[in-house]
Length: 419
Image 1 (cartoon, helix red, strand yellow):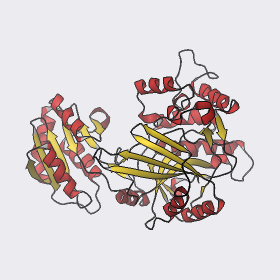
Image 2 (spheres, rainbow, N blue to C red; image 1 turned 60 degrees about the horizontal axis):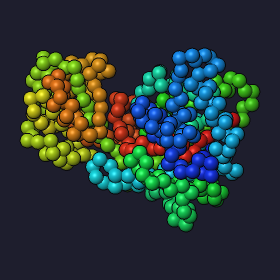
Image 3 (cartoon, one colour; image 1 turned 180 degrees about the vertical axis):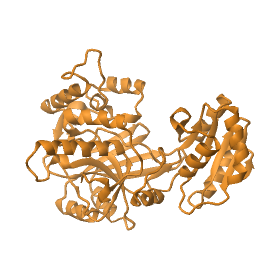
Image 4 (spheres, rainbow, N blue to C red; image 1 turned 90 degrees about the vertical axis):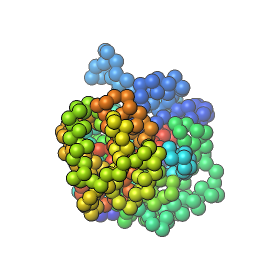
């Protein structure tokens, strides 16, 4: 089936009304801590946080609640011209420049566009992780009242020759950005409006044969599918309408600006017996290399990156170990090896929710273990993007928190009205 990626008339903040755009953008709703939410709310009365993370109140009713208040505020901002809709369809080019935890500097380029919704079985839009019901219900309630994509999800596309980015560079090299934000949430942000019809037709054609991989936003994509189906039951018109599409950030998976971090596993609430059982059983599955320090262990892990499976482990007895599988399975992911063999089999952990958390920072992982003796850190390399795509194309899913595309993209630069 054909992939449909189209330009659109985005809804954007009116700088003459709000002033500094950096005061009204926010991180994605699902990574914002309560104290950060309060800070964003106080930063500006029109910060996007008031829409994407509107708060419940004790006297909420079916007709007056966090979702209806978000919709009322959105309509107010449209009516008083805090938000203005662009007059013609266009793509939006979004650059994020940042320094990753490894000290390297990146500039990640995304194309903000609309993608036509397709069920996963059509293999046009590909998932790689399973979802949970709770977040989907919350986002569906918000879509039912606002009828707007308030933030894009993050998709990857393969383009070994970089043809789509070449079209984008042809525009951005000759035109200054409309938005140029200083550092906010760990990145600087630039935005261009690509309103050249010829370039846009070329981009749309180049995307037509490319499957798209969900990097971040599985819950919101499934929510958009559910909302589209709800709206189709209410409509008799079979022509494509706004509810058939959703706003996305599209990033080339071969781009040098794509930073993929490892997500280390932090085990907790372990008994002494579980830890001893795991350590005793390690030699049956792994070649074990005792390592002198965290820095050397991370250097050894780095040496295996992209080549073969390897895992690091730090235990409460202050031992660093490098674990190399004795019989590696072709195509097996490190995250699957860790979850199925180490966590479930060797540590006898069945219910992950009670025993696991995650971090992208090795120092945090080691500090986690040093705080208590019932903890173990499992240190990992990033999952290669190519492996994620292979899994998705095969119709399979990966363990939760298999990938971390760093950093998160800001919300608030462009909104997409569905009506």
